[in-house]
Image 1 (tube, protein in one colour):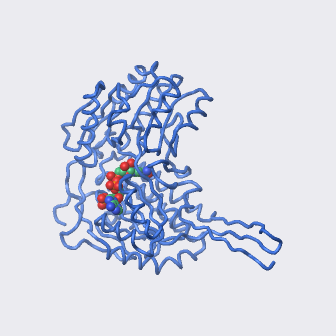
Image 2 (cartoon, helix red, strand yellow):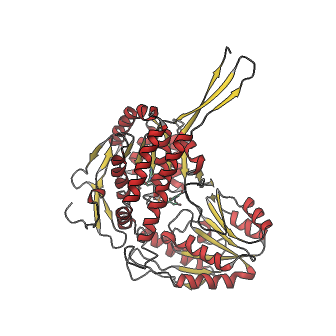
Image 3 (cartoon, helix red, strand yellow):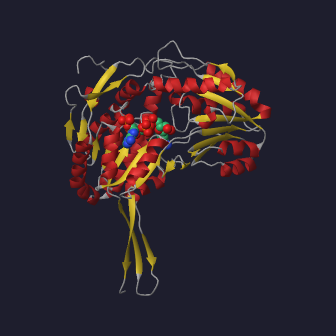
Length: 489
Ligand code: NAP
């Protein structure tokens, strides 16, 4: 590929355009690849293979050959390899961050943070590999005992999105490999380079051929091949609810196990007893990280009536300090959106809110920086009927919706088919328990926007998904329970 923009890396081998299938590196077929572009200016940075069902078949065959030996290895050995993978990621954080910002657009500081905080899932599951425990129980009569063991679920396929191209992989591959499974990954077509760099490091860490394969290509064809392949036991998907719904249907014929991390539409409540400075800091972080393109982003900011104006002023002051620009430029904390389609969706939500009576406090327009930029925007007087309340905006739009009392706030927050993350700020301990228990979400941030880490169970309820990633629960997604009925005792 001649006219691609060059990235300056300490280790240029980390920027590979080839897929890893059963230990073989596979290149694009001539120019028939998928172009990877920098969302900042659309510059071409790489061309990755456009693979399909035959490549998936190859990866499954390699996984099938490699998995029995991998699963039989002592957990301590699998743990050591995962730990080496973690160490290599940490050692190469700077290069991985450059690759991530080039293909995804987020500010470099956020890229570094994504890499370090998500490598932690490999470290965590390396430790957890040694703690897969069974049970021994009494039987129904004196001659029987019950022995419960856990075994790897089998060959797993993972499909990941573009918003955390690095982080969404370690939280799946970590527990899968720790449990003794093999994993075949299809990363998002807009951001495959981070996945391929992780594959380079996996190989260096000693992950055996066939245990971790990465295939780029046509999503529908690979998706159909994954859901219909008899040797794939489990699918772990992070992405939109729409594709998640399709996967459930497509995987139904073979009753495959599924873990689904899907869309969110997180409510963020500020009660009248909240520390308003802390709440404004939290809202800023939750709303504008990755330019608002996170599944756990505050999407609907509900503020109790007596403190609406005070909170809005504080948030507005903080937002005025946000700097929009290229992710690699120093001081930039909001980068471009992933593509122009995302900008148009943001515009649609702003237009809809303003047409229906919301008031613009900041932003409200596209930026002169380029076609993928939209100014961080603050509106007040939003309502439940507006698009911004009903749909995930996935862009830097903060919409403030006033509420009357606790019951009113909780009811409005729960008025959504999604249930991934939710947040609230309050100091009264009784309220903290009442609201924490009443919010319909898999995760509730109480006086904090920081909910994702390797020690916590990440995941949603309602139409936000099935299953959990991270924590001691995360590895269970990759294990089957088997029990031996011991008789004749
Ligand atoms: P998406 O369109 O669902 O894409 C996600 C992945 O699915 C990509 O790898 C995509 O491949 C692939 N895909 C698309 N159609 C497919 C099909 N028919 N069969 C199999 N795979 C298919 O989602 P997105 O727009 O990239 O990501 C944004 C969404 O992800 C948001 O809704 C966000 O909330 C959600 N998300 C959720 C979490 C969570 O943990 N709950 C975390 C991050 C993001 P291509 O790229 O090749 O199309």
